[in-house]
Length: 256
Image (cartoon, rainbow, N blue to C red):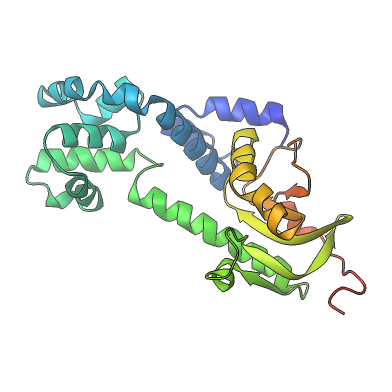
């Protein structure tokens, strides 16, 4: 995706309503992922600023303002807004998340209805959002395995490598290197996130560059999409779902 289109789309995703309004024009996985990434970044920036207002939020809530109204006022996700209020009111984190997983546990039907409303309007921190994120990860890894298996490329997965001497392991460590668009690669990493500059720099620092130091050059695939002009560290190559149309080349003499 070109940066200009990405920036316009990213900036337009301000609320859940924006995500729903754009669902006909863009892939739902892309919208969900971008909104999740944007929301989680803003939460990290504003978490403690909003938390300082917790006593005031509890007072406003006890006076009749709903969780959703307070979420909109403080520009914070509904479920996290509810968490601040409940913890300030004496609930433990364990109790709070049990209410999120089952609002019927709440004694007050009015409060349970507010919690359900918060869950319905939070597509980042709700149980269903966690399920979608997990499903995206499985979807991406399945595509990666289909791509490699379909070409007869053998590899070891993260599970296969667990307990070995390696401190970090990619999703697929190839048994023998292959040629990808003229480059020799030894591993492939699957990402169900959108590869923008922030995400890619974070992934590069935490995973991709360490992989090159352990195993050699490799490929990261952002299945939901990525920017066209990412600045790649040495020996790291990037693709999106179009990788499914790429044929990998064998290297003569490898493994002999």
